[in-house]
Amino acid sequence: MFDGFRTRSLDTPRGAIAAVCGGDGPPLLLLHGYPETHLMWRDVAPRLAERFTVIAADLPGYGASFRPPASEDHAAHGKRAMATDLVAAMAAAGFERFAVAGHDRGARVAYRMALDHPERVTRLAVLDIVPTGATWERADRWFALGYWHWGFLAQPAPLPERLIGADPAAFSEHHLRRIGLGAAPGRYPEAVLAAYRAQLDDPGVVAAICEDYRAGASIDVEHDAEGGVIDCPVLVLWGSRGAMELFYGDVLEVWRPLAADLRGHAVEASHFLVEDEPERVAADLLEFFAPGAEASRPGWR
Image (cartoon, rainbow, N blue to C red; front, side, top):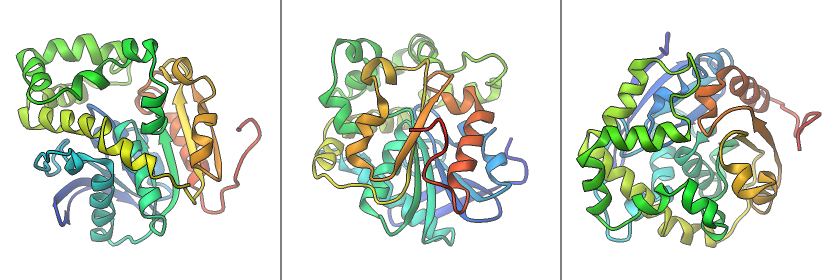
């Protein structure tokens, strides 16, 4: 995996960000989701590296990156703080302006980065999310049943940490497998699944995951309520077999108030579309991030 890439430790004011870097061309930052690490980009990053300098990073609290100490208001794990960390990491790698693509929790960091640091982000791709504020505003019984982990992980410490720690394998099997992680045949090497499961065996990572979701139920919503419009072009991709269309119907309509230049479409995949369909996702990202990319193409909205 990641042939031709090198491991980097990128210093930031709060701690070191672990990343793999490869390729040549305009800089492109890749951010993973829960409960993954940069490994989720293993099949896409090499394709992108044919055109871009790719930096696939572990989010703070995940993988080999630093673990922020918990704060009472959860701001230490908020997406504003993480976005600032990743901007600093990219500067440490030598890039003041860059494009960014994020999936799941990484997408929440990515769009907050575009809002808070518009001078840094040239193009933004968000995969299988809607904005955090809209997620809670539109929550209904389908959300409560399908994405029950949002409320569970956001419960006050140490309840979710202790329950997950009592049987991490059961939590992984009965939650993560059911929303699609590892389900696509031939797409998930056992070593990758083992690395994801190992995160749930690490109390420090589990605590960081819970703080991530506590921030997502509190400080992140407050930051979204401040408003703002993303200046750069935005691509939205989502899995047609995931929950986005079930929960929100027209996914692009949910994003439209936040993005002046918006396009996107569904991919025939689960929530984990990057790992389910890496060739398709890579092609979409290459076209969107290519220098001089058009604002839209036939068949896109």
